[in-house]
Length: 135
Image 1 (cartoon, rainbow, N blue to C red):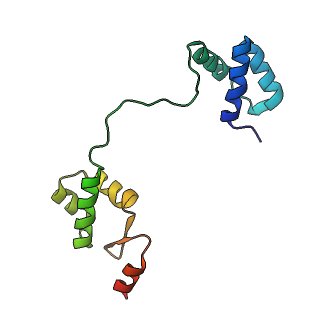
Image 2 (cartoon, rainbow, N blue to C red):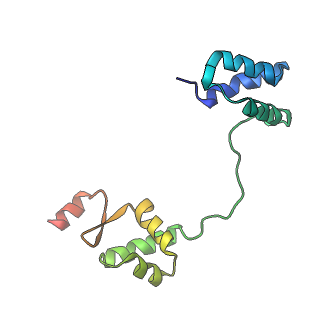
Image 3 (cartoon, rainbow, N blue to C red):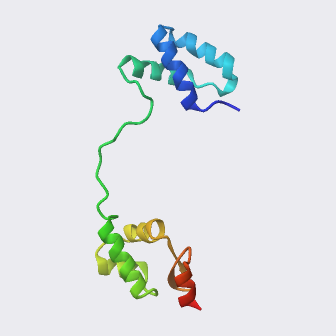
């Protein structure tokens, strides 16, 4: 079994700081890990990153558009509408709330953890209150 890449980055930092060339480091990796060793290209890329002053191999923060539709307000609105009429379709509620269908779907399935059962939206894990109401 090969060692995770996280564990391989530490020796790379040490070898880089000692001035050992990337080709020598890759040769030692190949002897140690065999076919599980990282590629020569990756070793050279990491050496270049360390040469530019980067100290961590983790991804940094990325800029981009923030999530605007999947927010607390929309989640609350979706939950209220879904509880009012559990037989409504995704398209109907999304149109009523004026949010995209895929956003509604993401909120219902990934945030509220509802699923469709017998044409009704129900929580995936029923609480004791839900079980008593259902009985």
